[in-house]
Each structure stands twice: as C-alpha cells, then as structure tokens.
Image (cartoon, rainbow, N blue to C red):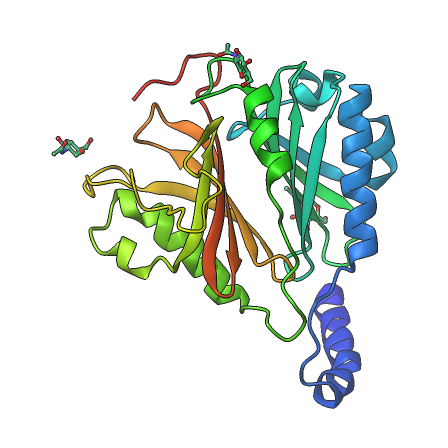
Length: 277
Ligand SMILES: *[C@@H]1O[C@H](CO)[C@@H](O)[C@H](O)[C@H]1NC(C)=O
Ligand SMILES: *[C@@H]1O[C@H](CO)[C@@H](O)[C@H](O)[C@H]1NC(C)=O
Ligand SMILES: *[C@@H]1O[C@H](CO)[C@@H](O)[C@H](O)[C@H]1NC(C)=O
C-alpha cells in the first residue's frame, strides 16, 4: 500500500500547479544537458570516463553501434583529438546529440546522451562510431566539408514543431520501404547531404538532396529509431538499424531551414566488417 499512497499524495500536490500552468512542459534545462555533453567531450578527449563519473545514474547504459556493451570496451576509452563538435539539445526528451570528428583517430562519432527527467543524471550514452571500413569513410574529408557549413539557429518565433521536424526525418528514412515517402519529405533548395565523406552539394544555390535517393522502395525498413529533436536548430538526430546494408548501425541527422530540408549528415558502420551494399 505504501508506494501507492505516496503516488497519490504526489499527484495531489502536483495538481494545483498543473491547472495553474496548463502549458507546463518538462524542461531539463540546457545548462544540465550542456554540462554533460561537455563532460562527454572531455571524457572522449581523455579516453577516460572520469569527467562523466559524477553525472552517471547508477544503472546507466553504454551502447555502441547498436549494441549494449561494457563502456570499458568502447571507443569512449580511446583518447581522441577532437577537431569538430556540435551538440544539439532536446529539452523535452532530456537528451543531446553530439557530432564529433577526430581525423587522427580516425573517427567520426555521433552520440545521443539521455538524462533522467530532471536532467540531473545521465542514464545512457548511445554512440554510432564510424571509422576505417565504415560506409564512405574519410574523417579528414568529412571535416573539410563540415567546417564550411553554417548551421544557423532558427529565428525566434519561427520554430517548427517537434512533430514536423521528426516527421521530416522519418519520411526520409521511410524512402527505403515506402514508395510514397519521398512525397512527404519537405525538400529544400539549396540542400546538401554529407554521407560519410561524400558530399552531394557544390555550394550552389540550386544544390538538391534528391539525386540518388532510393529508387527501390521494397527494401528493409530502417528500424529501432531513436530521436533527439532540437527546435532551436530545426534538427533531428535519428539512430537506427540499417538493415539493407549488413544491419549496419546508422546515424542520420536532418536540419530544416524555413521548414525545408537544408542539411543531411550520415554515419554508417558495419562494426568490425567493411560496409558493402
Ligand atoms: C534505472 O533506474 C531508474 C530508477 O530506479 C529506473 O527508473 C530506470 O528504469 C532504470 N533504467 C534501466 C535501464 O534499468
Ligand atoms: C581522405 O581525404 C583527404 C582529404 O580530401 C585526402 O587527402 C586523402 O587522400 C583521403 N584518404 C583516402 C584514404 O582516400
Ligand atoms: C529491391 O530490394 C529488395 C530487397 O533487397 C530486392 O529483393 C529486390 O530485388 C530489389 N529490387 C530491385 C528492382 O532492385
């Protein structure tokens, strides 16, 4: 009986607050999310989890390339010289996505960090760690393209809804298994894709993301999707299983501008195998 009683007391106490502020949302706060993302970068730089230690929930999990593994066996324990990082903040889901490039590793890594509901504790670190043998991999070249891009914040008052941002990414990932999905992607112009180290754009005003999109819509779907949505940046990071290429671990990040698709970044790794179509 005791826990149930406690729950009722809690809900009762919460009730007046909820009615008084109908738009109350969960907000982890950027400060807590940002501190953990910075600690993660410090940890990856040092090759040691010490900078993160005080932030971990006791039962935190470490996932690398879609497999839960002991963190000690992961790339997190390799000291890397990080030459680029960008973190996206999801203050509703209490999560961040960080893209990092370490050409000397060589590694290009995407990491989703999830927090407890109040943002205070890190409950999971989930990375897609691409390296030599990963799809279209060349970290030096990836970095050259990334540093030339300008990922602007969306002006205040112009944010797209979380649902719209996620739907754009989902429609794109559905193109492998749904003949009508491409009609739902909000294609923008210019738009560029950075797939591993291959760039579809020329820096021209009419760069398009549509050449080379899947023409076979009967392939395995991209499943087990995990999302980090940043409304200020207009972006969604989606991790998934890339079944149609050796069940690879895949990271797709989409950024919208003026409600239209502007940038796509991908990382796809086949673990200890060389990725092949
Ligand atoms: C970790 O512990 C918290 C609090 O006890 C619980 O809510 C959560 O489900 C646990 N997570 C995992 C992955 O076991
Ligand atoms: C990777 O890209 C760099 C920069 O474009 C290039 O100099 C280098 O030859 C490439 N490496 C391989 C293995 O293709
Ligand atoms: C499309 O992909 C499916 C699944 O891999 C395959 O069986 C089929 O032959 C492919 N169709 C074409 C036209 O390539």
